[in-house]
Length: 376
Image (tube, rainbow, N blue to C red):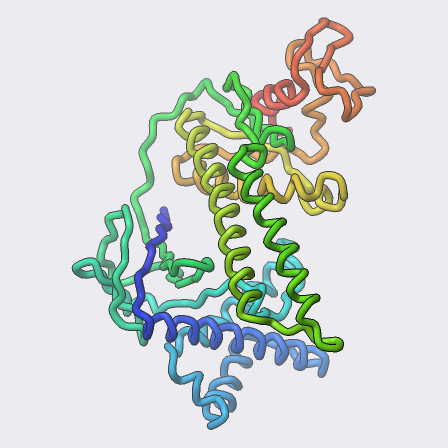
């Protein structure tokens, strides 16, 4: 079993400059590879990461105009082509959209780290070309000859090193009578069949509302400053605008961290119930996002992240994860007598059974049905 951990780094100013250079080189190699891939395809050839990597090494890296590529680890640019190949493979499997060019502003600031050069000693971690950097973590990190997919990334405020390593599978004694059904929602994050209270929507908390209000105010300030400093058709970015944009980035970071932490706590609580299986719906999240009235709420709830965390935590603890059929009518079936109510509408938040007279919250009824779900 692979265990993934995250370590916060404390690089010096010189190290931080090298890390940002590594991010830029990784982005450049990825974009160059994507452009070359499309060029070969249009010419009727069969592109591959091996061909593109070889051409990059023989032409671009030997060109004096791109001497700055040699200032960072060779693995940074080489692994960018691995990422490109994975992006195409995921696209052909239907797991993601067609690969796009990475931009300096919107793409994640990350780069691959050579795994066999990582060494932990006396609160310092050695990273190739970066050097020895201080770090802090709550994990006991073993010094291994090989780590799985180590990467550095910048979240707008701190640098982190993420890596994986082989770990003995957790031997947890599971409750063979407990099958957990989870129904995701907008008003509440999740309704679990064996819990009395639903898992709350953290976006309705006072803290999140205050942060969103502050974010809106800062965005309006930036917009006004851009308009005030406009020269013809071009916008001028002043120092005050840069300061405000940095504050906006930090608020986005804080909101994201609060939401992720809430999901981690929720999924961890469900796993600690020690069920033998967990059942969830196969949601069409991209289709749900097309609803203009609910798209923002669905985006803030991070359904995809909730499902992803449940999957890997179930696998790590030996719990069976079941995805119910997309057209399984969990909300329309009575959890007491099993009869189906065809005329149930979305506005009906209380399920009333016409046969046995059961009155129950619609989402709670769906979670119980998911818990009792049988694979056909």
